[in-house]
Image (cartoon, rainbow, N blue to C red; front, side, top):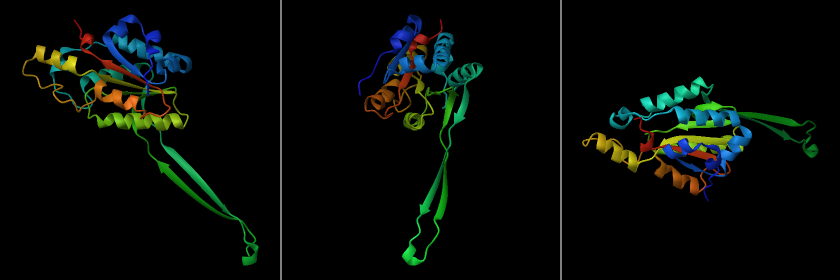
Length: 219
């Protein structure tokens, strides 16, 4: 699948300079057309965000201080952690077979409830996850959840905020030559995410990816 670049029209130059972007199916244009307020809140959050030296040097798990700062900023704009559960009710009607003496329709009912994955931030018809430095399997979970939500007509697009890899690794080593931060490439980053986009893992769901780079470091 070819990547699109509608983000160039909807994100200001200052944001485009600091972050790396990828998208499928003109996700930014879709967001502008369907959820313009939420897209503007994403732009505003990217303007506000600054990368700190501690984000590069300190060890951090799935929910590091950086991810928490971003999530809290979205909370201030009305975004909330959310989980979409699905419930399927099936009704089977068995028609009577008169030679067997049957006269009435028999009805068999069943119900199946599937619990969905939690999404870090949900607002209107947009789902957004922050994947700063988690196991890269989280990307499969996120994209699979977006695809299911899109195919169920629940969201119009999915957004993932992640990071670049090599430039942040170089930055970490400049700040601390003994740093082991970003030593492994098996955690969530743009290089891991891009192939999942180009091979079409999200199906028809438009996906916007925003990667925090070394250029986001606060002076």
